[in-house]
Image (cartoon, rainbow, N blue to C red):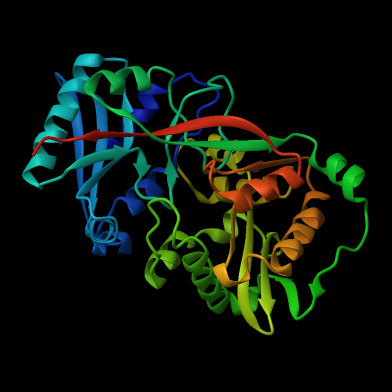
Length: 358
């Protein structure tokens, strides 16, 4: 496990754009005893060595709920990192495929780190730019290592950015009190005093809104609690908006701060002094990220959408830049929102798959 966790620090040594992951958090995510996602999924970690030196790694996840919903026995690979060594990666995936065949896997797909709710995809353009929070980052040569092994692109995603969001909103929409209620709908911020209940409301909205999305599996109460454990470190209560219709939560807009410049300074480890510095410097972050937008299907053509856009306008006036996490080209709701805020396509990511012989 130590070799698995430390390999990226050797691969990206000297790269000013890389953001080292917090090692304790990677351990937590990859611990089946703590992560409730693995109640319905198996995890196997692989490390390839050249002599005594680790040179490549990957995690393999098989989720039986995915097989039940989508009808394919799929293994997802993630946390893939490797030196620019074709022989090592070929050896690594030969072992992976042998394991997958023993598990009757039909498709090998990724990267998912470790699932659909996490960082995912392989970056394929704009390699000289640093990643924002919750954005995959990798060397340019990774595609050249995977494609000769028989992997092909199964999905494409992209992020979008407006580097002058405050000026854009002021010019297009003006500075005013944006409508926060209309026709039985109202929008409010996350309530810290009611945090557990509001998180449950958000989970219900997202599970309904994303039910038909690509690869989506509903998140359990335990999974959502696990994934939001450090929510207060990456966002504020007034950056999360909930739309209610006569008291029922029907829509959610969730934004987070780009904490990556602060994570870079931690260099993988957190201590009391680093933590206090992180909390102090977080107040000065000027880049906002649209993390997730979801409206229950029965309300997607109602005033809920406009109220969330109004809330987004109010938030944008407090920041310099606005970005998105990964988006699919077919997600019409998100694309409509991106267009309203002048968000322009920024980085592209792909998901690879390989069909395995029985």
